[in-house]
Image (tube, rainbow, N blue to C red; front, side, top):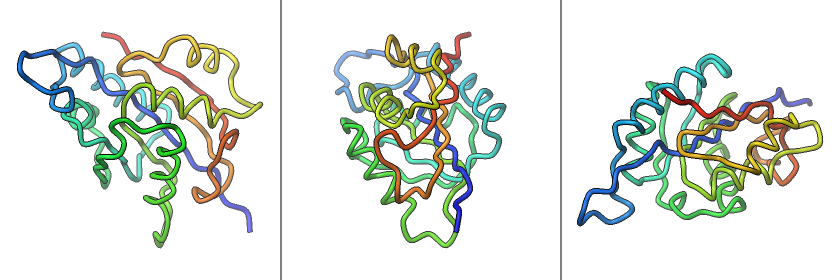
Length: 172
């Protein structure tokens, strides 16, 4: 049985503010971060269409980024995404999608650097778009998003297991 390709979007949170006395986990988005997160939502809608599920860090800035995208899909908030390595992020994606009656065709992960760019680079296979890959290696700033096509089941997701098709840096 062949599994239909799935889409994975890795979104780094928007530009955050630095209010005094607030721990890093609780930093909110800056006004620029809210604007650019909204643009990221528009880009995701254009490139991917409907997102079926979201995995989001519990940090304030990632929650606010997700809200600003306008994406309406079931969300699982995960403390472990805050400082996760690419391997840990892949484990969380597998855990989220395991045991579902219907696996999501499009999954959005909202997280941090270096986890989001590291995961995109870890997953990118030889079919990946060279320009997107070069950009991801050079710079994956706030609000940047990587779109990857997963050619197998979510449970099989591993290094070199997806094609990076786009890397977009929405700017207002």
